Structures are given as C-alpha cells and as structure tokens.
Length: 485
Image (cartoon, rainbow, N blue to C red):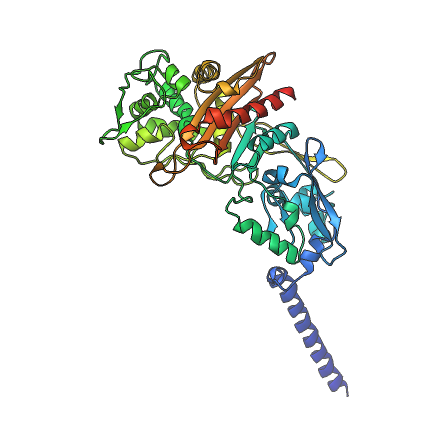
C-alpha cells in the first residue's frame, strides 16, 4: 500500500514540476512573444485604460483625453489640432503615434521609469504611473503667425531662439486634425485613407521631414566658408567673378537676376543675391572648405533629433567643379529642411555658436513635479565669431537696402536672405520661395529669434516668384510676434 502511495506521490511531484517548468516557459521565455502577439489585447486595453498625459504649449494643454466608453477606453483629443499637428503628431488607437506623441510616448502613457516614485517601481509592480506632462518650447503667437502667413499654401516655417536653441514655431502647411485619427472604427479608417490619398500631403511635416533645394538662401553658408577659409578677407573688395560666369568645364552660362554683379564684392552679392559671385567664390573655396563648413551647420547629420527625427539635409561629398559652383548657390543636389535653414540663420545671429535645437522644454509628473529639464547646449561652432559678425552686417544690409526689404520691422534690427530655388525636370516647376532671417529688439543685446520660411506654391506667375515677395512677409510676421513676447 505504501509503495502505491509513493508512486502516486512521485507522479504528482513530476506533474507539479512539469507544471512549474511550463509556467516558467510561458512567463519568462515566451512572455515577450505572447505580449507582442497581435491577438493579445491586454497591452492595448491597459494602455488606454487611463487618460494620456498632456502636451503643453504656452502654459495651456493642447491635448486631452475623452472617455469613449469602449474597451479601449480613453481616446486622444486635440485643441487647435491643425495648428499644432507638426508639433504634437497624432496618437491613434489604430495607427500608432508620431512626432512628440511618439518620441515622448513613455512619459505620456505613464510607462517611463522617470515618472516612478522609486527606481524600477513600475517593473516590480507591473503597473504604470499617471501619464506625465510634456511642456514644449513653442510660443503660441509665433506659431499662429506662421500658420496664418502660409494660409494653407504648401510650405513650412521654423523659428529658433538663437541663444538657446529653443524651437519657437514649427508649422507645416497644409495641415490636418490629428483628432480624426484618435480612435477606432470606420470613420478613422476613412480619415486615414483620405489624408494619405491627398496630393497636398497634409500629414507630411514639411518643417522637419521634407528637404528642398535652398537656392540663394544657401549663399550665407557659402559666404561663411569663403570668409573662414580666407578666400575672402574684405567683404567690400571686388571678388574677381566674371559676368557672365561660365560653369567650369562646361559652356553653360550662369545667369543673374540682379544687375551690377560683374566683379562685385561679397557684400553686394549678398545684398542683391548675385549667382555669379557666389558660384565663383564656392569654386575658389573648394569642396573641402565647403564640406568643412556645411558639416558645422548640420548638413549630412543623420543623428539630429528634436526629439523627433529630422530628415538629413544634403550636401554632396563628391562633385565636379561645375557641380560645386551650382551647389554653392543652393542648387544641384543640395537640399535642406526648413529647420536646417533656421539653424543657419540662428548660427549667424548667435555669433557662430550654433545651439542644438530642441522642442521639449521639460517633462513633469501628473502632479507638476519636474523630472527632466532641457538645457541649452552647443551643437557646433558653425563659423568664427568675426565671420558671424560680418554676415550679420551683410544680412541686415540685404533687408535695409536689398532684396529682403519686405522683412523690415520698424524699431528692430533685422537681417535676412532671400532664396528662389529652381526644381523639377529641366527646372520647369514653380520655384520654391525661401527667406531666412533674424531679428533683434531695439533694447536687446542680441537677436531673439531666427526664422526660415519656404513656400512651395507661391501664388504668383513663375517669373515673379521670389523669397522677398512670397516668404519674407511671413518671416516678418513671425519675428514681430516673437519680439512682442
């Protein structure tokens, strides 16, 4: 009898061991696969069981949560959704997250470890903290001015505080309402299909995810390279550039839109945007000198984040001499995001010290306690301080007495550079209108805002499109809003 009891006990012990091994296999070895299985609804239910944290602009939340009464309980809501969509992105129960909603998802969903009252608390408790708050650097008045200035036309605006790197405005047009994508159901799928099918690409963040040929706005970079390398030692001296200028190794003549560009000085070339002078100086500076400068400004940097990833602004590393000439005036394969060109203007405005741009000022717990704070940091020394001082003076002259006069603000010191970028097959497309600028209040010790504007579909005849006419008034409105604050 005892023998049978022992056998039964051994069998029970074996079954218990098998049960424990299987539980360990499921709980440890297969836990990740089971959690990520599309059929597993528990993570999604838990994710939307509590309100999502808030994104704040100018002291006011621009996001919220709505109790849907469904299994995925809380849906995202947006205040002034189209205005702030290039900042917030969307948080969709169907299509995931983008931009700040994605980059700060751990904070907003309450899973980030920095929100925990104790280290590893969430891991040990298998819970999550209330969603945290993400406070942005955006200034509402500047954001609104940029949005209104574009008026639904395809284009973008980026504005930076030169001394800190804070992004003060980030607008992409046309825009969309991210609230349309928040929940589930046929209406969300319909909105998704409509937005993706639109030729205007409203969900494309043109400010940080689209690159354009920068055209003549890039001449500020070329000028910085020529000055830093010693190719130009006197900005008011004749450059030696012929007019007409024939691209090296070709029979192609480079035209000028302005008169008086033959053998003109660098100062005159910036003031009136002479192609021939800047192409000539680009060739004299050489590819190595240009590459050294463009890298300092942030071109070809694949690691830039604000915290969302920024598209790479391109300047080719291998070119023939004629291609160098075209690249020096922002053509050929040279492309840039509006944020990148705002960084160019910010570097000039801040004495050559280019600060790393950032969009999140701080992160707080739901109770308001700050758990992370952004601080200004140097991204790169884009140029010598003396070079920056000279370029400031030249950009101010371009606004006061040159092509950028539409950006002038009474009582403020404003510098700018226009750009008209050809594109399309055989340059047949309507040119992109660019304007980069900075503004300094009358009583300020340094410029307070740097702006870049690009307008894709300028509402003028092709021959009349210009950065000064189409983009400069938008930049002026944004700078005025910034100086008022």
